[in-house]
Structures are given as C-alpha cells and as structure tokens.
Amino acid sequence: MRIVNPGFGLVPAGAEQATEGKVDWLNDPIVLFGNSKPNARELLEGVKAKLAGIRRTDNIDFIAKNSASQGAPPEMINDTAKKYRIALLALGD
Amino acid sequence: MSDSADTEILDIADLDQEAWQDYAIEQGWSDGLPLVMPTEASVARMVAAAHGDNEGFAAISPRQVVPTMASLAANAVMAGAKPAYFPTILAGLRGILDPSYNLHGSMATTHSCAPMVMINGPLRQALGVNCSSNCFGQGWRANAGIGRAIQLILLNVGGGKPGVMDRSTQGSPAKYAFCFGENEEESPWLPFHVRRGFAPEDSVVTVMSGEAPHNINDHGSTSAEGLMTTFAHTIAQPGANTVYGKGPYMVVVGPEHAATFHRDGWGVDKLRDELWLRARIPLKHISEENLATYVATGHKPTGDFLTICRGPEDIHISMAGGPGKHSAFIPSFGGTAVVSTRVKLPSAGA
Image 1 (cartoon, rainbow over the protein chains, first blue to last red):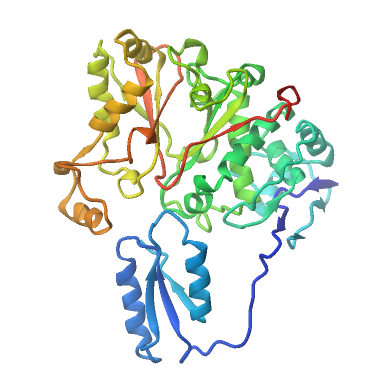
Image 2 (image 1 turned 90 degrees about the horizontal axis):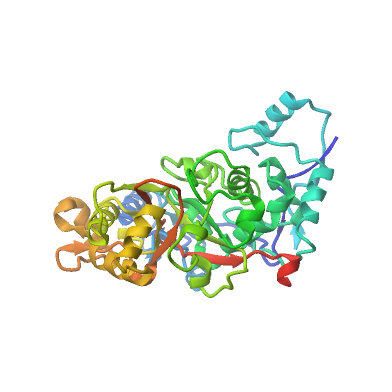
C-alpha cells in the first residue's frame, strides 16, 4: 500500500552545510556561545576551565545573544562563523 | 531546493488498523493518539480542498525543511481533519511561520507554549467550530482536527519531537490541540479580526505561542471595577514567562463577564489600558533570588512592580465561551507575536 509521508519536506536552497579543512581542537579559536539565560555564562566559564587542562585558552572567547527566547541575529552568526572554527553552545538553563 | 533524505510517497506493507497504529507510532508520527492513515486518495482530497492555493511556505523549524502541500495534507488527514478544514489549517500555519511568531524559539524553549489558534469570521459556523460552552475543550471535530493537524505538522515536518527538539520541561495538554472560535454573535465588542483591520466577512486565523488557558473565576463581582480586580490579580503571576521575555498575552472574556464590562461602559481599549496599569507583579511576590536574576538580565522593576508585557498593545482581548462566570487568561511564551492570517477561499478572491 502507498501512503504520503507526513514528514516529507524540501531542503531550502542555500541551506547546504559548508565544511572545509580539519579542526585543530588544541589550537583553533573557540567561541563559547551563550543563550543569555541565567547561569549560561557560569556554565561556559566551567567549560573554559575544563578546556584549560587540555589546550590553550588565550583564543577562547565568550559571546551571548541578546535574548534567551529569540534566535541570534544572522549577522552575529555569520561574524562568529568567520572568526571561529569551533563553537560551544550553552543549552542548559 | 532539494528533497530531504525521505521520499514523499512511501510504499509500505499492507497493514490493518492495529498494525498501522503501531507502525505510525514507530515512525514517531503520532502525538500518542491513533492516527488516520494518509493514503494517496485521502491526501488528494485534502489537497483539492486548498483550491489551488500555491503560495509557498517558509521552512519549518526546528528541522528547517519546506513542506509540500501533500505532506501538510497528510498530517491533516492523520489528525482526523475534514478536507474543508484544510484552508484554515494552512492559514494557521502561515501565521506560525511568520518570523514574528518565532517558531524556532517557541519549539526549542523549555516553556510549555503551544500554538493557540483562534478562528474568526463566517468559517467558524460553516466548519462547526465551537465558540461557546467548553470552547477550549473536547467534543468538536473542527476544533480538535484543526488544532491537532497544526501540531502534527510541527511534529512531523518541523521535527519538534518531544524531548529532542521540543525541549519543553513539562509540556502542556495544549500541545495536543488548542483551537477555538471567537463568540462573535454574543460579544458586545467588534470581532477580534475586524479590530485588526480585516473585513467582517473575512475568515481569519489568529495564532500565538501560548500556554493553556488559565481560568479567571469571578462569581461575586457585579461591576467592571470588581471584575478588573480579579482579572488583574489573576494575570499578575510571579511565574509568568513574560517577565523576562516581554510579549503579548490574550484575555478571553466569557460572555457574562463581557456583558458586565459592556454594561459599565468598558470597551476593549479601556480593558487593555486598565490591565496594563493593574496586572503587574508586586515585588513582594517575587523571591530575592529571582528578582536579582530579572534585574541582572535587564528587567528592572517599575516602581514596586514588575510588568509582564510592554504596553497595552501587547494585551489582546477576545470573547468566547458560554454561560457562566468564567473568563480565561492565555499567557504567551513571551518572545512571540499575535499573528492573524486570512483564510484563502475562492469566494474571498484568493
């Protein structure tokens, strides 16, 4: 029997993911990206402290979007993607 | 655009009703309730009811894929919707996909928000949408079918799987279906959609990312002033999401309360102004730790209070329900908007 797939959808043009090169986890710059919820900064600071045990931290920076309930502005995401190879997101509250 | 890894038509083994339900649940397509099988024929009947509507849809978050008319119709079929409901379902979805609604945020949040769907205009009666007694509850196929279809679309096309990309801490029964109509016939005020600039003969779907309705019981007050005291203090909740995600809320006034407000000369604008001034959270109702968090995130008190919206324009008043001294408060997610979309029908020239 044939049915219509209720999960079917089309991938928008231009939504393909860009990947290039290998990531150097010990040296590439990292952005710790907060969602501006309470404790997000503390959570990310803990991540940075843990990373200090395994890699350099002078090129690890913090960024936070302005609103916990709104997505980060596209320009913020684009600028971040240009500057960093690795982004770690705080998803916890 | 390119298609996702899936195909639009699935060739599956012949299944009886019980086996179909098990199969659909295994696929993750169900809200937990039985689903109608989306056969090609039933989906085609649903698509035909869209009357050639070929306006595109934005990608649906969080999965970020663009639906086809057939995949939307498949979800409407599974929800038990009649084909006649489909244009209304599509209008509701278009509202939800408006950027101001913030679907991605409302799906990813830990808050319990669900798409509130309110219908205005002649289609309410044509489709049998309940606007009166028990309008938020069970028992009406149109309310259940339209609300559930939208939820299934967000689940299956949008990828809002509970606990995965729908991150709500506790969820809400409103996530099964949350659809009602405004009781325009008994309202003392202009219909909600007319106040928003639509024609009375338009049929309009209004959506907001909201919590399930909170009851406002007042059997004792016999004046607008008395009712407002109860309304304002019921709405001013220290646990409101809109303290730090300032945004809209909806007050659905029951017909008996509406009649009292109207008798005392309170129109919609007066209600909004009074709620803006009075539905504020006294600081003494907020813990020191929570207040410190609010202040640290930029939500400073106004005098001895915290506000729960940005101004009267964030307060939306509608009228629904049947006999009884009850009204309802529908808080929003906060980072969302109330979006109204006209239903496309041939007679409406769309």
